[in-house]
Image 1 (cartoon, rainbow, N blue to C red):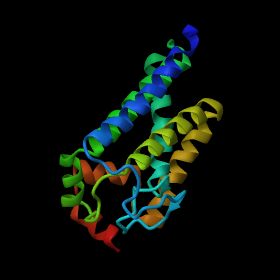
Image 2 (image 1 turned 180 degrees about the horizontal axis):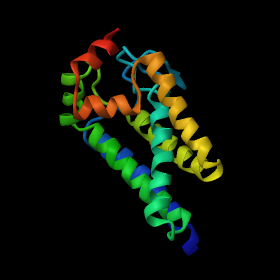
Image 3 (image 1 turned 135 degrees about the vertical axis):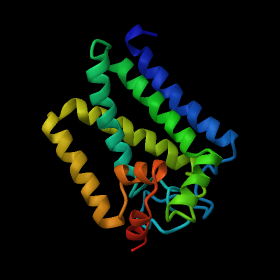
Image 4 (image 1 turned 60 degrees about the horizontal axis):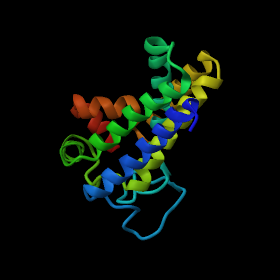
Length: 185
């Protein structure tokens, strides 16, 4: 194996190990509905976060943009492949933490996500792939385009589903009744 490919093999291993861990802790491989959809657009549904993509997929693309910027700032001397591996490790850790019983219960207690029981392994893996896409995208488009994409995705998801990356983080860490009431519509 060439040394230049090592970080890409490590990245693939991280994705596979995350999927294996989620299976090991009892997460469903696919939606318990018994089928796989490319897109599931209904957020108030037991199928949310169970298929390949949903309204939360853009937030994972944004993770990639943000991780790219952060790693460019703090570790720009590392080759791209190693920064990609680090970003993947961070995203994988998030997927594992997000799908822990404690965080699932937190979501259910402080947000309107009463039917949330964790991501399927397919959805969690797809979320990591979305982050990888965002990371690659940040490398290829101008900084202004990354910023515009970040703002646009947040505005779009706030308008369409009354949620997004910033609101998700806010409600997980510091829930506000006013935001929960607005999200409930």
